[in-house]
Length: 344
Image 1 (cartoon, helix red, strand yellow):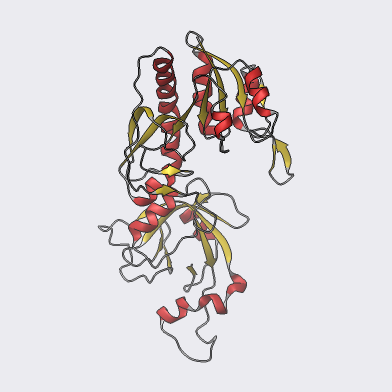
Image 2 (spheres, rainbow, N blue to C red):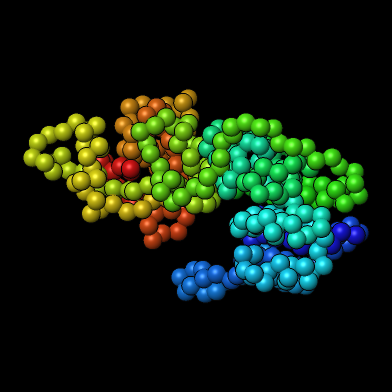
């Protein structure tokens, strides 16, 4: 039986923790390392991480100290762990920590390494238009996601999958992959494979500003961006429900000029607008407007479209400022949009 210390923080790490804890034939999870309780919500109440909640439910001791602290290695060794299992922990483990466990540390990473090393592999994979991704179990070394590989599994990215959809599937599939790889490693049945050398794209974290939607690009690019940013950090734009005034600068302007200069003229009525679900408009639907300018809105009783650089984008689920999430058509009926309403 392998004595394991599990390090993880968010929801996607919980299936792997549960899999290892429940496989009592092969593993003893001696402790869980996670982030300290953090303030969340409007009340900023201190809240445990999802991994800590699962650990307490499973009656596993929890460590919340920073691995950079001098006392951490002594605390780590006191657990009796032989190996570490890491899933979305969120902190870099230094070389002295990596060398503190006799059998090393092993990470479950949600990409097919060496592609998409870094913090947001699934989001970047969806955004780039990949059709295949997967999970990799590798041994942690001092490089970022560069250690030798124990095992991999693949997962298709469907045309309408969000990063949340993919992460949910990979979290479940990856939990079995991690358990089987660690079992094979402990029994000496696995040969570690070094990652090939080369230049590979890094999956840097997606910021709130990265998630702001641009509508002056092709609709396929917007669709990928929205799916990549769903559910976190959430795709958004600014809604101008009353549009822009043609007389704002004392002369008539073309639609194109009006849209490009709207930020200077009517930010007073602008409000954040979140797109939760959307897809490129059906090109065979005669109702779809053919000449909708980028960012301009067009609505019917059942549909809401936004113009892009190519075909319109159809909104399916949205969340306006101060409102709950709702079907886009339901939102539009109560939004009192002018004929000049637009987003940017």
